[in-house]
Length: 580
Image (cartoon, rainbow, N blue to C red):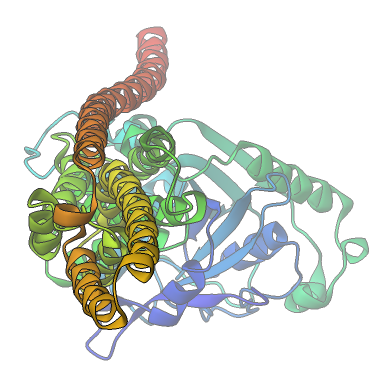
């Protein structure tokens, strides 16, 4: 992106909405994202810090007066300077406490969205960190009123539960003087002295603080976008560099429950989908819920994972299987590889499929497709099967007729719709089973044709011998009559070759060979069926294995998350003990 765009804005009714064009930009990002949001009181120099993170002088709007330049939440996606396979998403938020706007409710939602969407939250303020500064951070103390972790969360539930899902926290303190100083609103928060401190400890971990000296003096402050580092105070330049280096090295990838990493692209764990889910809840008057957002995202992502797995399987089978394959084993091997990869794609791109609903849907899709294809084959190839059973193809020229019928039935099957992902595989398995029968028909055809040719030759030789005899012992009229009778005999015999022309032994031999070939074909079909059974068992075991691997990975992520929260809570407990 060359410049920032608005991600979330207020519509004409004053309600927040997500900007579609910004989602389209996110949709082009298939890398994992590190999301850094900056929040703070209006005109405290937030936008300048974000421009520094983007490595640009201009980008997020700056201003030298009390008027807040940023409205809503603006987004700038830039290549991550340290993580080549990541995109750095910078979110600059509308200044809180704007005296002109006077909409505290909108401020709370802006602050809450910044927390929900980011992996690192930067809170920017002026002056020093004192009681007054902490009092202005009342947005943190009210987070539990605007964000829920669980849909059935009860009031007063342990606040440290938020620690699992909230971003890391960076407090930047700027000694920044504006053209016009405005007194804080007279509205006095009735909060306990230690409440802001307690909320920071319970909601965010880890936490850092960076202090910046005044960047320049006099009129230079009005022209910050025009200044180079040489025009700024050396101490400020060094402090800004330390801050940027820290964010680049320490800011984590945006993750969801189970340690799933967020990207921009729609068919993965899209950041835009999260933004839409949270904003939709706010617009409907509900409180954004982390669990509900994950469930909504799971429905989108798991359905998409099924489609990606299915597409990968179909493409793999089409690319690697050259029809017809030599053996059923060859088909099974390719199927095993493609199915394993397809299941892995689903497992790795799905989440919160705790009852395996979507994985079962993926496998059910395979099974339903196979059933539908087998039913269509049974119907379309029925006439072919009847002719095989009644021996119609076991004749001279029968193989050509069989091939024509098989080709027509295959074309009809492929022209049918509603076959699903297993269409070609089921057809291939059927053709494999018929390969041995086709070979038997071909061999029978060849044997019968050879027998016909031998019989025809024997008849011709016999007629020649009789012709010579009649030339010696009969008159011309008798010979002509005999030859006419012989021609009739030949004609009849050729039309009923299997009855008149073949010697009895040749007919029996052909039948015996055909029977043997049919037996071999049946044996081969049994082998194919056993192979299919083995494939089904392997499919089941592969699904179980990959599911167990996924559960093990999720368990490790849960343990790591629990340890992080436990360590943070222990630190809080130690500090409290030392105070007492």
